[in-house]
Amino acid sequence: MNNPALPLDLQSLRCFDAVATQLNFRRAARAVALSPAALSTRIRELEEELGTALFVRTTRSVVLTSQGQRVWQATRELLAKAAHVRAAALSTAELPFSLTLGTRFELGLSWLVPHLTTLQRSRPARTIHLDFGNSSELLDKTARGLIDGAITSARFSSASLNAVPLHREDYVFVASRKLAAAKPLRKPSDAEGHTLLDIDPSLPLFRYFRDGAPAEEAWRFAHHEYLASIGALRLRVLEGAGVAVLPRYLVRSDLRRETLTVLFPRRTIPHDWFRLVYREGSPRTEQLLSLAGELGRVPLRA
Image 1 (tube, rainbow, N blue to C red):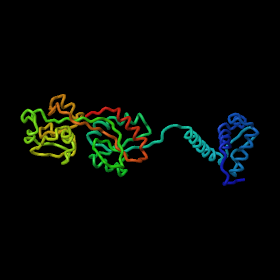
Image 2 (cartoon, rainbow, N blue to C red; image 1 turned 30 degrees about the vertical axis):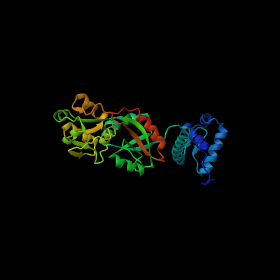
Image 3 (cartoon, rainbow, N blue to C red; image 1 turned 180 degrees about the vertical axis):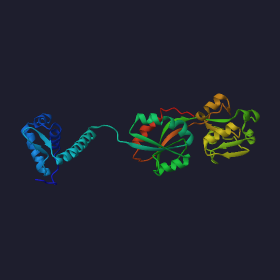
Image 4 (cartoon, one colour; image 1 turned 180 degrees about the horizontal axis):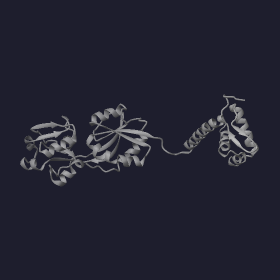
């Protein structure tokens, strides 16, 4: 008797699938490890539950009815889904997830983008998205939960943010070779003949050099030029437009080619760190810390 309130028995459906495949009760019984009588009982009960005949039986043959054909197609789909459920229960594969990281354009393009494929292969369930911007914008987005984290050397004081160090960032005070030859900068008073290039009026890059200088030194530059991007700073220094403090990794090849000259080479400039900054209590903290470990093994390059 058809009773739609009763759940279908997967074992009975497996028995039905075996008979529909073999079109022979004895062979089907062996396939499901039942006696022919027990198998026949299963099929009869299933037909009663569905309220329709599934097979036309004769002494010589077993043939699916038209309803049986439809039920068989649905049965195979259901059994495949059941197998998928079992596989999911036994699987240890990681569920897919994504992380959105903010970074400066130069650092992202030279360092992160070339390693995205390797990072994807190392953890296939993870997708990394990039968001480019300046450090203050990215720190704000991280604090507000708009991105999962930011890679930056910018300092911050927000109690809602945490950070993991990735790479030490060393700095050099540089000028183009031609500018250094034409207008030597050997003592602080020489700055009056130069333009200082930096990110913004707070002089976040030159501050590293000043932090390593004697307190009594006075640095007064003829002009200041603010360019927001260290990539733009590098280009302007190469043009001879001014002097600037820049990350050593960014100008390593320029120093090797001697297109740039290090100013005050004996002075120690305090270093900083590239950090992966993330929001306190982020639901992605575990994944971010794992990524930080991987990024710490990826060397910086310009």
